[in-house]
Image (cartoon, rainbow, N blue to C red; front, side):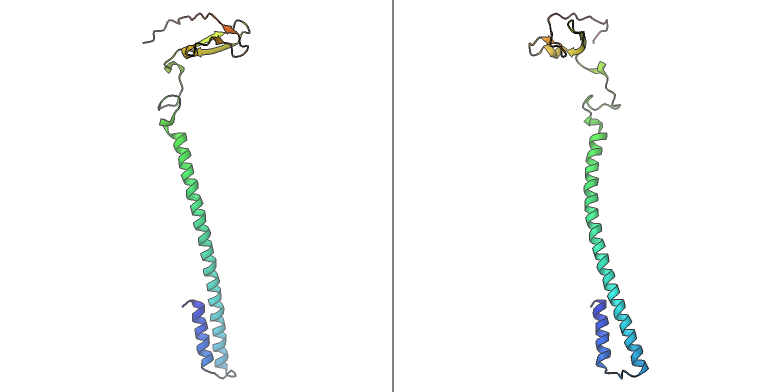
Length: 151
């Protein structure tokens, strides 16, 4: 039985005793039963509110768990050294052009003066080298050796 059911049961027992309503003792018993009834209703209301709060907390926990999982995914992407797109899992995240397998060349367009870079893959499709700014086709390229040995 719930507390409100117990209070109603006691009230029914007292009413079943058919006490004399004019006596002081009966008035005290009725007042005590009214207090018990009010307290039982207050406790029942508090239990309902606690249950509603628990439901809200459960919903919040589900959302928090989802956010935590999403954050873990983001942390894995941001902090995972193996996820480095530039250097195959380097330890220091510094990108160094000297570590590239192919040489990077710099050329100045004789037509507009634009300086741009390319590597040997620029010639893989048998297309001529063109200036990205003005579109001038560069027929001859003079590549100077900087004196370093590539071993």
